[in-house]
Amino acid sequence: MEEVTQGYAILNDIVEQIRKITNFVPKVGVVLGSGLGKFTEDIRVIGKIPYSKLNGFPVSTVPGHNGQFIFGYVNKIPVVLMDGRVHYYEGYDMFSVVMPERIMALLGAKVVILTNAAGGIKSSYYPGLLMAITDHISSFVPSPLIGQNIEEIGTRFPDMTNIYDEELKNLVIRKAHELQVPIREGVYLQTSGPNYETPTEIKMFKTLGADAVGMSTAVEAIALRHMGVRCCGISLITNMAAGINKAELNHDEVKREADAASSRFRKVLWEVIIGIVEMMKEEEKALKEASQPKKDTKKKNEGYDDLNFDDMEIIKFK
Image 1 (cartoon, rainbow, N blue to C red):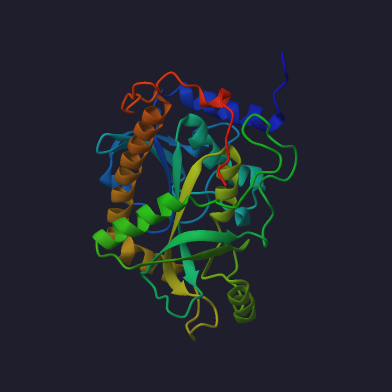
Image 2: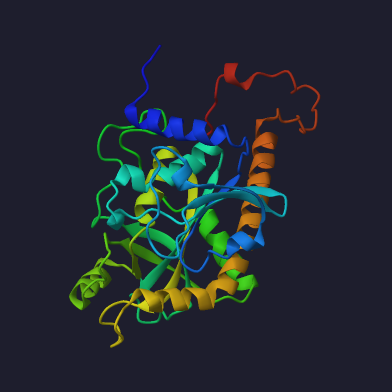
């Protein structure tokens, strides 16, 4: 019997602990960022598992992050919510930081929606605006794939060209427009935190092409891409980054803006989840049709039907 990697053994142990509590299989996973805690009230909840009840699982320490998996339904769609994420600045290693997203995928989630609160770098951004993430810059934090590769879930050198699924991003933008919720698309940059950035650092990030900055998400997207799990990212701009205006940055401001935008953000998230499942159904249908033998719709022509053109000599006309 082939030995499993240490990382997979740890992940598998967490999954087994959850499976002793519930056999619930989600289709969609959601990481609830700041301002989305009340989304748990929107769904039909069937169960909750606090992270503290799972041996070997990291626990959220940030105020406003409850630290639990919530299982339930959006309409009839089974979902798992991360009510409180784990951050690198809390002192955890990167394996622990991305563990919750990997667990959601191993439980069955085919798509994971990553949400966060972010500081706006682009001058046209403003607090309360949503940003659909098109790409990210993760060079300022360690990769979650450093160390022994977990062969059971992904390749050693995964491609990150399309880390945020294009179709999912377009779906997010479309649903926001339908609900008349302001949204842009842009590049997200992750820092380690917990301190906010300096004005000079923000100038550098802007030069690099970043439109928003935060302390999460990018490494989670890398881990999901490594597993072959589709993901999309949505940032809520809760403040302008350091130096963009003269306002002093603080966590209370972030929380206030996130709470103020909560209602419209939750509506977008609800519609995106429904749209994702509809999109997956259409894709499944298309795959089934493509795999079925095509019927010969050519009109039968007497004298030509039995000709094998592969065996015939090709005559080139001058």
